[in-house]
Length: 370
Image (cartoon, rainbow, N blue to C red; front, side, top):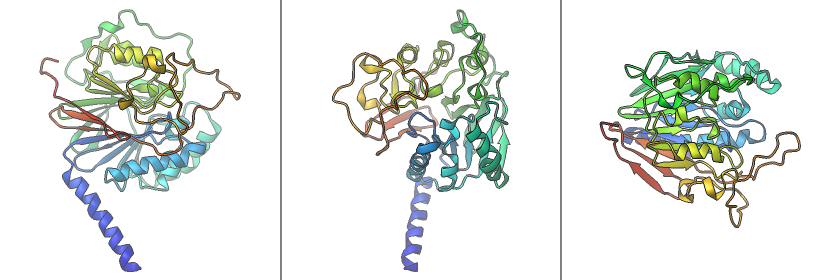
């Protein structure tokens, strides 16, 4: 029996080493956590960064196991760095279950919680404090560089502050700011605190801004663009709130929305993505009732469906239901889940794959003038 267990452990270790030795790309795994957020980055050296840990409550075990499954596929046996963008339950709710399944070496966040919530505060003052006392804990600020081998990982937003110094030499006037103004009378939430990252791997660039609000997006991108452009945009707020002065100014070639069945990817957001000047495709982690056939993408670009399939998807998008205790639950998807995988090369070429159907598309290196 002992020999069998030892052999199994040895084979697992060899498989992990083989993945790490053969990887030459920066790999991203956009995990389906049902309208929450969890994106795993793995560098060619095998170093890993997880951004957020999915939902809490009834979905915590489900989401933690989906994240661990993606990590296993990536050959990751411990997460080197974890960024919690902010303290909403769909971004930190699965952390306790996750840490019970895989070690985490460093915890990165924006600092204290600013939006009181009994369940979140209890975890932050108990379980999270214990976790960070036994590992490295970093409170990140705009301009900070997270040390990850082979990747330039810059923090561009945190704790309501935004990057002031241009990433690429000089700021560029942002024409999409001309008719934009900050929203007035908006309550501040943890979304405003979101810890946002700009990631560069050779000529490949991507960005993840958590649930950054329109007002913080405005401060980051107006009147000048201090970030430059990206190849891939992980849509903020689950593909829910992304202004033209951000989504158009960044000029992504590909947008990935980490949406849910009834969260994100609604018409206003999808219109902005589809009309972005350089966008080629939009990929969705989930089909969305809010987009309908009119504003959704072809099925080959959608990674997850629902447990009880519909005979047909309505053409017109459904309006979001009123919020409150009587709100009916969204369609369930607790069965087999699939992630979207992005593999980027240093020359800027990258491939996006839908793990549900095996469909993939490669985006060549962009012209030097773009």
